[in-house]
Image 1 (cartoon, rainbow, N blue to C red):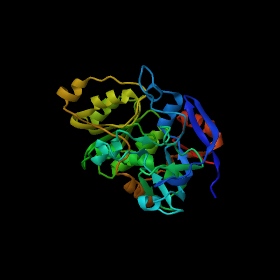
Image 2: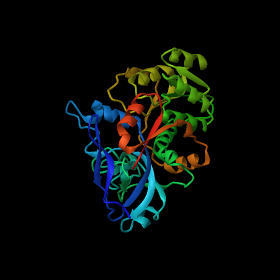
Image 3: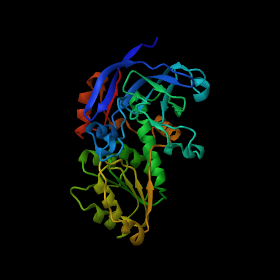
Image 4: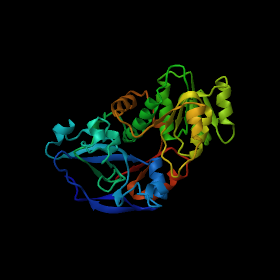
Length: 358
């Protein structure tokens, strides 16, 4: 029996996230109601909480978050109710463990018609748009257009919460088009960057290099297969990479730091005709010398957004252990202790904190 109301973390504005009682949604045609296992706190959640200009608007720009909305987009759960036709539409049954992709595409726009659903013109996003509440609640509704994948019973709730960020990491690595023997740099080895390292390793690069400012993250990067780990606050990372590549620079540079300095650094570090992948979301604009991209180096610049077509292989890799996230999981907090969970995440001293519904 599903309750009528539930506690949820509701976003009202910057630093105004409230634990409130809200109605439990009822699934309509094609919709699924899931009971949430655990929710990861993402770097984008932290930036939204702090009120960065690209997230909350300013200078006439629309905000990224449309509150009030239940927060959280890194989560999975178990099907507890089915709307009419939902079982057939999504290929699931009551009791199945499932995860939905972060985006809910419209299915009708130019991009959806071309199977480029992750760039949907009229999409909703779990946890950021008021039409699509996120997972920081006991129950969550998957709309009829949600892209749903089954999750094996063998994954813990924490591992299942990692499906979304690792799928995003996988898409970014795919965009790098890594060839065997390449020198690959991952700039920023937080949760997603450490996933990128593990995924990039599968392409058999000649050298895999991690860049960060935090020693504990660089130590983990070495454990996860980085051949070289560079603290950019202590070493000249550009010169070091050039020294490791006979003066040429890296073949592939994946920017996952969220710091504009990572972009400028990458353009200096990458070789001519190299591939630059921009993954991060920034709280502020960055300015670069576009002459480097064109006349100087003729670079391939690839953006990376979400994790399209990467969920099945991500789930399989987490299930068989070829991608490990257990060492990235920090603490679990009850939903009612959200403020403490967010403060701990903002400290930068841990990787992934989880919020557990009550």
